[in-house]
Length: 442
Ligand code: NI
Image 1 (cartoon, rainbow, N blue to C red):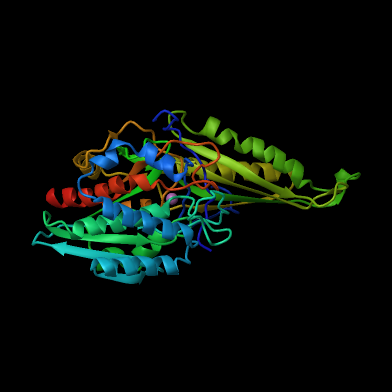
Image 2: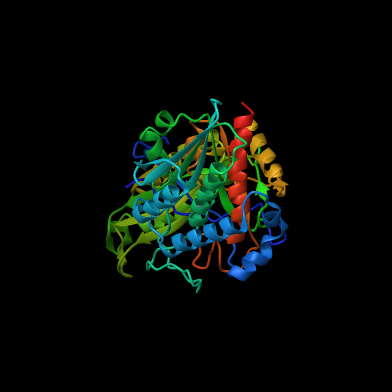
């Protein structure tokens, strides 16, 4: 199974106002990761209320297209599909591209689709990306277009991202003011199942030799329609941590005849928490969260085995090396101290999402052109994003577009989350504009 990294919900930069190792036992695999941050819950009327002027100022998206995109987004919301299972979603995208008269190739890296528009004689080529997969979450929104698939939900807004990219394709198909080639990347399996890696492995950049790539994620807690562009780091890289402690089970009244993994786990957890506080430069950023602890079956038996699960996050690769080394050293030390076997396994994500300077500038310029507020003062998130993998291959930028006001109980990846349809004009408009702006800059 590709590396599923449990979601970390972190969003330090927004507010309700606007706003591892030396251990020989260690195993490190490279896989895709993803997790997301906060959000907002809202009914449709509230969405419209929080959308504000930016959407109305967008000159490019007609009310009719907005209405159509909203209907498409809600259809996708009602019919969510898990990572690697996006067959119907992919078919829906292909159907809409056909309606729009835009040629495409399907089944790229799984259920991925890439549509391509070429206009004029310019040689530049830009990629725009949206993710398509949903999450294993039971929806509790009560919305008329709520999920019809029990236990599956578009709780991260990828339905909205897909609709937005279809909107950008519609805009650019009708726009004669640009020259070059734009590729529209509809990516599967973003939620920890390596969709970006799979598309790249399937020849994405050879079959569609784009010079730059851009993408966005809706960002609850940021004013609806505001585009946030980071200089440098946008999202964290991270990995899944699994630690197994094997001791010697026995009678709870005769502990001297056992090797107690529960006691060793207690010491290990405390010691591991010293890594960030004492091993990482305070001016750097890292998270090591241990989130599961399992072991034991009887209250009068010392268990034979304990497992600990968690996640680590960082913004700089050098910090990753510290985390991995220290986890290995501490596990080895605890093993020696308590006479148990400690085996850490770390499954790493795709990397840190880092905007290229020139492309971050183009992203801001495009936002200004669609007359929406731009912010460049937000701190990066400790959430992950597999768009990072594209940015390791091509220069580009990944922005956040405000999804509107936060409401309690409706965080991103929460059961009452919903994408804000009112931001579709800004999202589609920004994507179309950033492609034009990037092509014009060549
Ligand atoms: Ni997401």
